[in-house]
Length: 289
Ligand SMILES: Nc1ncnc2c1ncn2[C@@H]1O[C@H](COP(=O)(O)OP(=O)(O)OP(=O)(O)O)[C@@H](O)[C@H]1O
Ligand SMILES: [Mg+2]
Image (cartoon, rainbow, N blue to C red):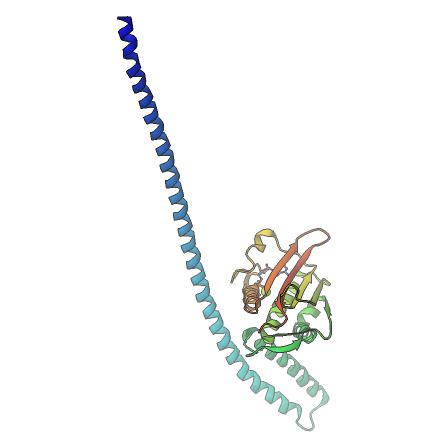
């Protein structure tokens, strides 16, 4: 009898093992299914964020198109009456028998008008000025940008230092590059305290290992610096920390221009310590075409 019981115990044990194995298999399958579900969920979330990003990009590009259109219309509308007033002022200045004081006032008005004309061409005309790449001296480009922003420099009592070999040349869309340097210099002048300093620097590097020679332009300031959170967004269109005063387009436009020329733009910034301030570096092929 005892022997019979012992013999029957074997199939029962086998059944228990089979059930355990079945349970284990079930658990493994369940685990696998959970993993697949999690993967699908992650893909879905990624898809949703990608769609959101695409929608945002579309809204931004529509905004940008309307800003571009508005800028073109404004530039046109402002330039015409400006030209008329400039002519009238010229005639008034050349009138015979004009008292000296009146002539001086007219000259001052004329100087201010040319400043407005320059700014509308520069800012509203954006970078349409040069239709073909040309070879130009970087020192002259720096001079023209600094001249353009002279009023801002004076009001900030800022020191602007230019470090550029006189003979250094490059071939590019000159108006577009002037736009980039002026956008970066404007940002630096906004960022510094009174009597702060901005340095514009251009150097060339020989092309080695079959690489073309390159130009490096750096714009450094000892201003307030950019926090890490802000830094991650500065190249996005319409991102600004300047409220109503900023459009948040300067860096975005600059990056587009630099990349169009086959170059790259980088930024380093510190908000405290002895190295407080910001440096933008642009590297461009010496001849982009
Ligand atoms: N040199 C700098 N120092 C500190 N912050 C800077 C500097 N350059 C850029 N930034 C930050 O990056 C943001 C984006 O700059 P960007 O030039 O694109 O737009 P903006 O200057 O605000 O407006 P605008 O369209 O008039 O140029 C600025 O609002 C500012 O917060
Ligand atoms: Mg700006």
